[in-house]
Amino acid sequence: MVYEVSRRQVRMGHEVTVITTDVYDAKSRVVVDASPVSIEGVRTFYVRNFSNRLAYSMQVFLPAALPDEAVEQLRRADVVHMHGHRHLLNHLAFRHVARWRIPYVFSGHGTTLRIETKLLVKRVYDRVLGDRLLRGAAAYLAVSEAERQQYVRAGLRETKIHVIHNGVPLDEFRDLPPRGEFRDQYGIGAEARVVLFLGKITPRKGVEFLIQAFSRLNRKDAVLVVAGNVVGGAAGALGKLAAGLGVEERVIFTGLLTGRARIAAYRDADVTVYASTLEVFGLVPFESLMCGTPVIVGDDCGSCEILSRAGTGDPVEYGNAIELADVMERVLGDRHRAKLAVDRGRRFIEKELSWETLVPRHIEVYKSVAR
Image 1: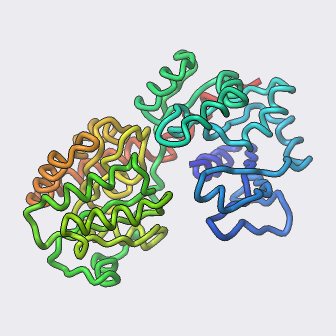
Image 2: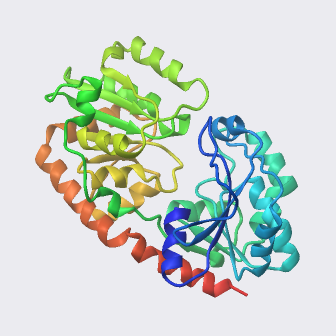
C-alpha cells in the first residue's frame, strides 16, 4: 500500500519521503550503497533493524536510531503518515513529530485492537507507548467500515475517522499466466477441482476450519492448496488434522507464494477461500477475482463488506465448517454462476478500487490536517 500511494503522490507533484526498516524477509535485508535512495521519485530511508528473525517470525521490529537526514525530513514535513500500531519505528518518529507539533495521520491496518496473540504484551506496550501515539493523531484512515468500528471500539474520535479502501494494483493483472502452469508444477490433474487458501497461516485465518470443511465435500476429485507463510507450529498441526480426517493426500502445503507463482495459483484454482475473522480488508479475495477465480469470504471482514456491494463473494461464518462445506459445494458445482460473480467483481474493482481513484482521497485528508 505505501509503495502504491507514495509513487502516485509523487506523480501528482508532491514531495514524498518514506522511512522504513531494512528487513526484506526472514534471512535477508535490503542492501543499498547509501540511504536515502530514490524509488520512482520517492526518497526512501532504510533504517537498520537488529533482528530479521524477530521481525519476520514474531513481528517485533527493533530499529536503530533514525539517521540525521531522516530526522530533518520529518522536521520539514507538512504531514506525517504512520502505518501500523505498536511499531517502534513509529515511536522513533513520534518523538520528533510531537516536539515539532507536526500533524500526523494514522493507519492501523487491523492492528489497533488487542486481538489474537500476545495480549498482555500488547496491553503493557499500549500503556507505556502506544496509547499516547494513537490518541495524538490528527486523522485516522480506515480501509473499511470494519476497521472504522475497530477505531470506535478503541475509543478514538469518530469525527477524525475517514474510510478509504485499499487499492488493487490493476496493472499486475493485465497479462496473466496461462491456466495449467501451477497445476503442472504440483502434479494436479486438469480435471481436479482446486480449492485455494493464500495468506499468512494464523488461527484468525480459519485454515483449520477450511480443512474440516474440505473433508466434508462430496468430491473425491477436489484438492486443497494451502499457500502461505506459517506463524509458529501451525503447519505441523494442520498436517495432523488433515491426516486425522483422511484427506492428507489431497491437501498440498506450498509455503509462501509470491509474484508470478501467486498469480498462477489463483489462475488454476476453482475457488479461493478466505474465511477469516477480524480482517479489516484482505487483498486476497480481490486478487483472486482479478485472476478470474470466485471467492468465499468471512462474513465479518472488510472484504465481505466491500464485495457485497459488488454482488459477489459468498460470505460464511468464521469457524462454521458445515456452512463453509455447503458454500464450497455450491460454488464448485455451478461454473456459470461463478463466472457471473467474477465478472461483477472485476468490474467493481476496476471502477472503485484502482489506486488512481483512491490516492486523491488520501491527499484530501492530508490537506485537511497539514500545518
